[in-house]
Amino acid sequence: MRLINGQAAERLDLSDRAFQFGDGVFRTLYQRDGKVPFLQRHLAKLRADALALGIAAPPDELWLADLRQVGTADATLKLLLTRGETPRGYVYPADLQPNRVVQVAPLAAPRPLAAGGARVRVCEIRAGWQPRLAGIKHLNRLENVLARAEWQDPAVFEGLLLDRDDHVIEGCMSNVLMLENGRLITPLLDGAGVAGVMRSVVVSAAQQGWSVAEERITLPRLLAAQRVWLCNSLIGLVPVGSLAGVNWPVHEADAALFAAIEIILSKESFTL
Picture 1: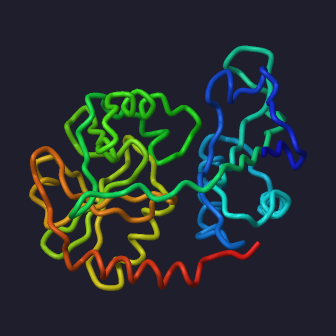
Picture 2: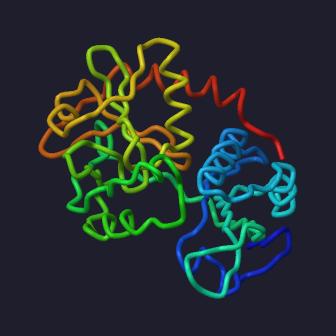
């Protein structure tokens, strides 16, 4: 099921700039038992990303009305905001009307993990450097598409993207965090990458017991970490079991982080 500007519809106009240029932003989240985890964080991030691109974000009440309209069954939800429709060309009028899209899909079952956590590979594709777009979840995700096409082995859970300077940026679909000397560290995303909502949740959870920082992380530094995790809003927090020949066993920090995230989840699950 799809809603476009609050109405049931299956197609955007071909003149929409999302189709022409990837000109828009989006969020992917889920609902279970009528509740949407971290919804306010998602809407705030959507507004911030839209503002960074100069797109007028609709009031949160419109998104909430859309979500209530699509029902309360367990589902994956995708919220998209496009800049709107123009005939052609990069230039757009200041009064262009954005299009608001809600897509609903079945909630996928969790993917099985090997002992110790997810098997991860390093991708050949590099994360492109563009400070103006760093952190934003915009609709142009070609780097991620090409990176994900590098492997077909279902045993590989995720691929890791480095930037032009060999710094770890993110996974194809996830953010990266590591435990180093009792500190939780996540890559500094000032030149590339997406600053995901679940990343912010994990950081909030970790601040209850550890020092937290955003820093440049090289691959050797990541491989020397006490523990490495991936996260996004659908998979939650996933420990990494193996990467580039390094294996990590289950770590006591796993349980501590999971417990802290559950506390935040209990406070930030929005009932539709």
